[in-house]
Image (cartoon, rainbow, N blue to C red; front, side, top):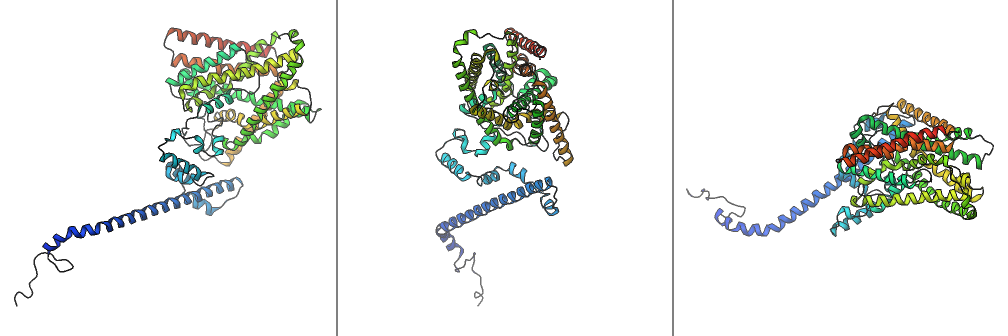
Length: 541
């Protein structure tokens, strides 16, 4: 009776066995339950992954809704409409920063772009093959629009750090360009705004100065403007900005003159040229108010295609004219008073000096950049010298500053003129944008949230800038050859010949010989600037 209620010693389990027997059976039970535990863990991991993917999709959808709301609010504010509910729902949104700071969300959104799944499949297959990202084609990473707009002018020029209102995004390093991309970038940046005769000495001088600038970039990181500031101080950088403003503005003034002459010759022969320039200023003023380079990619592409086709047509027509006048080649006399003016016109061609450093930094194979650069510059010199020589042999002393003006009228010639005029019309906003943005930086301090009144003030400033360019074009049309020479000598020569040598003298040169070469050539470039500028003004007629 006393032992009836006794409790067995040791812990018990569900089957009523004692602890000693359960300890012997535990390993067997654990071995039997191990696959079940692993299966449960795998199920839990899959469930967790599915939840994370669903969360990512939800966040991406949320970001897209907020970004669409932001775009609609921006459009509504520009149209003068208000929506308190939208303003309240998007006042706390940080969608743009989240998308920029979280690469996973950006990758998820890129899948929804045109061709996103195809590019993702190519990357996945390349990863399975062990192919590194650097060895994959650039077209796998960018859409067609991104590939075209990534080559815009502002991302390459040396004053790219001048911000506009609302532009607070830091510079994103671009991926390396192949040798063909480098060659195209150098060719496009240095082909110039017109086909002009270039002396061999001027070509060699310009290439030598560009190589000096590359030597500075190899030892001192920074853009063209930053290198000038390191060597000459803030005053030197401001001088660079002033030179590029006037050089770009002079190019736009040349666009005014040529388009006006085409308009008068083909459509309204009796209209005075100043009136045609004034009408063009009114038409081009709204285009100068475009601030986003990405909106100009299609016009830039169309202008580039027209320029290539037009140059080919000019070479063919000038060659036919030279062949037709082969009997009078010996009678051609060089217009000696215009020889020095040609130096200024030749310097006008090397306006792409600011593209050298950004193109070098974007190169996938920097060791081969110097050879590619020299080869492309040699091709450009041969192209320009050939056109200049053909024009001289065909027309002699009657050759006009713009060779298209020498071509006799006809449907084919008029089509070529219209092609060049359309190219200049498409390129005008992009050509003007760097100059007007630099000019704006001297009057307007960039702000993150510009008001409507501030935007109106900047639009009025840009319209006034275009009006001033129109007046300069009216003045330059009276003596076009002197005007081109003055712009090239006064502002193209310092950018191409003086500032690169000054940077090399202060930042790189060590021996007396190197410093002596920089001083002599820099002084020669300065003398060319002063002498040709004075001669251009004196020969104005």
